[in-house]
Structures are given as C-alpha cells and as structure tokens.
Length: 444
Ligand code: GDP
Image 1: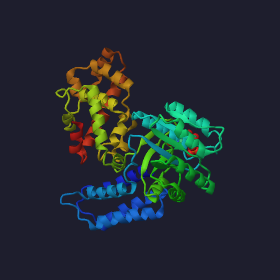
Image 2: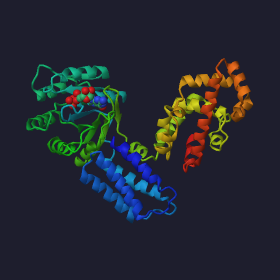
Image 3: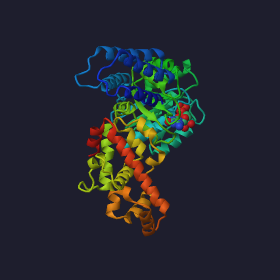
Image 4: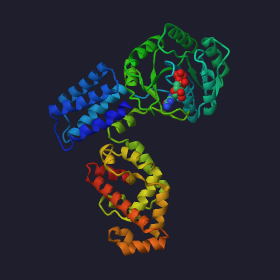
C-alpha cells in the first residue's frame, strides 16, 4: 500500500544522510521529491501531497536541529510528525455501549467490515450486534447473517422488508441486549441522491455515536468527492480501509481522512471476520519509516524469551554481538526466533534494519523452520563442545564422524555449517550498523 512504498523509498533517501550532521538544501529537496513521488504514484490527492511536502521542507530548512542530533534523525522526526499530523490518531472508539453507522459505496466492504468490527469488539469482552439495513443489494442479508454467525455476534435484518429506516429502528429494539450496535447500510455504484437521502434518514433514527466511511484501498482520486458528500450528509468520524491485503495503493483513503478531517479506525486485510486490525498510528508510522516499532518488538522478544527459557548465564546476546558467535548461540537464536515469528518480520521492527539489509540476505538465512531446527539439534548432539564453540575448525573427517554419529548425511552436516556461516555473516552485518547499541539494549 501507499505507506509501505513511501517507507521503502524514504529509507533509501534517508540512509544517504547517515553520518551527516547538517542538511544541505539539496538534501532536503531530494527527500521532499521522494515523498512527493511516492505519494503521487499512490494516488494521494495532489494538493494534499503539496501541502505535506511544503510543511516538511519549510520545517527542515527553518528549524535548527538540537546539538548533536544527526541530520537523518532530525528529518526523520519532522517527516514522522507531519505524517502523524496528517493521519492523526486512530478514531476514538471507547470500549463501552455505542452505536456505529457504516457508510460507503457498494462493494467497498461495508458488510464484511461490520462483521469484522463486531468480532473485534467481542474480543474486547463486549456484546456486539450487526444490523443489516441494505435492502438494495441482493444477497446482502444472507451475507451479513452468515458473517455475523461466523463472528458469533447478534444479528438483525429483514429480507422481506424494503424499508431500511424501519429495519434500523426495529433492529435496535430487537438487539437491545447487545452493547455495541453496528449498523450496515446500503451502497450504490455511485453517489446518488436517494442513497444520501436514505442514509440521512437512517442516521436520524439510529443516532450513531460514530459514523465510519468504508473505503476500498483501491480507490484513487474519487475518494475526495465521496468523502466530502458523506461528510456533509451524516458527518464522518473515521475511515475503515479495506482490502489492504491486495495490491492497492491506499492513497485515496489518506485523501478521505484529510478531506473529512477524520482519522483511520480499522484496516481490513482479508475476507475472513478475523482479518481486521485496529489502526495504530504510532507503531504503523514508526515501522514504515524504519524507526522500528520498539514497543511491539520488546513485547515479542520478551514473550519469546519466556518460551525459550534462555538462562542468562548460558547465553549472553552481547557476546554474540561482540563477535563470538558459536553454534550454541545459533541454536538458541533459532529457538528464540522461532518463538518470535518470521525473522523477516522481526527485522522490520528493528530500528535501522528495516529495508536494506534484509534484501541482501539469501532466502535461506530466514528459514528457521521447526523441521530444520530439529535436524540441526540432532546433528549438534553429535558434536563435541569444542566443535560447537569453534565450528570453523570442523574438517572433512569430523563431518563424516558427526554424520555417522547423528544418523544424518554429510550433506546435512554441511548444510548446518553453511547455515551457521550465513548467520554469522548476518550478525557481523548487525555489528557494523549504527544502531548496535539500540540492538544490544533490545536483545537484552
Ligand atoms: P459492501 O457492498 O460494501 O457491503 O461490500 P462487501 O462487504 O460485500 O465486500 C465486497 C467484496 O469485497 C466481498 O467479496 C468481500 O469478501 C470483499 N472484501 C471486503 N473486505 C475485504 C478485505 O479486507 N480483503 C479482501 N481481500 N476482500 C475483502
């Protein structure tokens, strides 16, 4: 999506600033151009792009970086703040009794999002109900009912009625035991007067606490008009961006957020009711800028450590970062990573590692599957402690002995040594990076 693209192109430009303490005007021009290029190609509204990039430029030129702040960090902070300003906080949705109205064109993903959001609220201990008022789209009732069933939430709809306003009224009565009411509405292919009339009437009956505009991530420049019209008729408090699992660029959604002066509430990432994420601007933007989502990473590392039960005296990550990477380290490392989730995702969360380094690694370096680990453990059991501490000294004869002892093939032993070499190289690369201190702090 748009922000991923911005993230990777920006990281490249920002990396060129590494080591610089002052920014030249050309540096700033280059960064601003990169931001413009990436946002425009993702269909973000032109005037919005200009506004954002002008702000960044102005601030980068005028503000004085605090003493000792590297140029890269300084710009990064400005870009971050401007993006936070544009995207804003996640739409406020208190975990309490409330009514939410969904608006959007047909096919934008309203019905799916209604069920997803209901599921999300149910995971927070609330009792949600979906009310389906779409009498326009054939099949909307059945689809909504089925999805509500899958989400295991209350549901009301009436396939025999042609009066959406009445369905909404009745729906609220019939589901009075629920505490969160999510009212799905009909869409049309385009904005038509009767669609606007209808949703205004439903809004009058439902009196929602929050009205959300559901937008397909693929929407481009059309987002602006749509957002404006819905905002004028019912007032839009937030946006749900759907189909982010596809190749869509998502730029239109940013425009809609800006146009309605609202924020992003949820992201839809698939067709199942569980494929939904509450939008978290901080982590999201930090991660895309390659600053690392520190809180999330710390949490994952902690969880992984608990599961792996790594004894402190057994394994000191600092040793590893100081270059004494042994096969024992590798084994523990693999166990920990296995518990943390895919290595490439973990790397995305480490400040400064985001893009670049990951792409330079062979695919195998990331492949820490259970099967491989099991095979490696068996092989390592047949090694002497000296061999594990200094694998480089393992020669052909020893490989033969280890293979025989572990009931594996020489090829498998070689594969393990190969993996070790690759990981050692990766660790060396970590060591060479500016963020070593940060890395050590986190690994601890
Ligand atoms: P509505 O007309 O606005 O109610 O739209 P629907 O909820 O019926 O969604 C239209 C189509 O988009 C359906 O085929 C959904 O399965 C699909 N869809 C909705 N949200 C997502 C999503 O986040 N990811 C994917 N891949 N498909 C989605």
